[in-house]
Amino acid sequence: MNKPALLVIDMQKGLNEVFNFPDLVNKVNQRIDSYHQETRPVIFMQHTDSELPYGSDDWQIVSALHRSKSDRVFLKYHSDSFYETGLESYLHHQNIGTLDVCGLQTEYCIDTAIRVGHDRGFKVITTSGLNSTFDTDDLTAKQIIKHHEAIWDGSFAKVNTISD
Image (cartoon, rainbow, N blue to C red; front, side):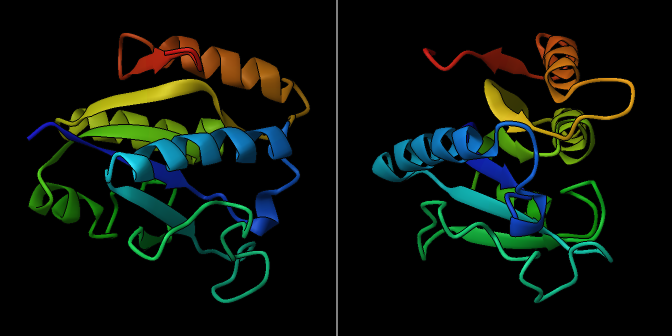
């Protein structure tokens, strides 16, 4: 059970003001295209809460993404992609053992998916530059991303570079 799947998290219209969003969309599309060409599963997580209300324009997955009809979409109501979403059951039924994680937001949903996925026994990989977030009062988005990628690499996931 080591079949890989791409997990694209919260790439939704209402989050399009994150650091370097157009570049992120392009890079995520390259990853999606690679998975589609190899007929590997692509899974989208779509967050729903008071800031991204179900069915609203902000809630919609960004239309520029190369989503195919065969891609799965799971709704989530928590920063944890595994919490009451059916994701883990789906992964097991599809014999998926490796999660390739990308999307939004670095310190919330991406970090949680990487740590929980690792804890649940999945091999987790991610690629540097395929996650993003917003600047905060204390740290820039670049600092947050760099910090989290350093923590993940070798502890919770393998962090690849684009050239990998």
